[in-house]
Length: 341
Image (cartoon, rainbow, N blue to C red; front, top):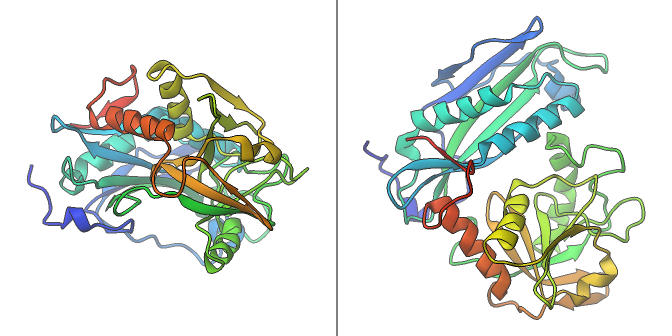
């Protein structure tokens, strides 16, 4: 199949409209059979629930061209599971997990010409999302919903390599105890926008959010989970009921233990112990791992021994192994790779 005439090596991380997207509507207590469409526009009433009360959730994953020329996605079943959890928390009807994976498959297959070639450094980003679509003026859940999936080719999150970033300890809270921090709700990201713009204006790349109850424990950033490496090479990730269960984080912990033979811990991480770690990174779909070189906690600086020039050695091994699995260099655990074509 002939690829689109796109300068793959110079793609940014931005939206580019592709040919097809998937749409399914929920009405009278059931989802319709769904369809692919070439229409990228959504028409809604001015009083649609999503516009008035932000009743929406989403997912994010990627399709890759592997070394042997196949197009694959990475663990879409876990995205399907997570979207079910998000929908339930927001009083939305769950889109069936098997249909979610099938919809992703169909949209990627229909847009195969937009999947960047192997070695380009680019990928096809996939965005499934759902929202309340009927008119609601009183504060209550919608009765009708729309589930959609679109794709867009994107370049590598970091141009010229993943250089360590500088983040700050944020004075704003990301999520409340018993709130929606553990689901991928659009409103969580809206709440983080003011803080990230403020961080950028002050010269920081990201925010580190602490738990809002005690402000003593590390949670996550606005869009990624933390990953730490101790001086004795143990991989540690924060555990909290108010952070998003990152699929990338779970995959990295498996890779650390089963591929690299490292000890792993998923536990509460106190801010007081961060200074004692050897390496730090942010993990998520977009960049896999973003290395952190420095954390600024108001008048104190925490500089990791791994430095500001390159990834630390353990984080580099984790990154290389997981991307190797995704790209087909390294044999994947059973069920991790979903082949499109």
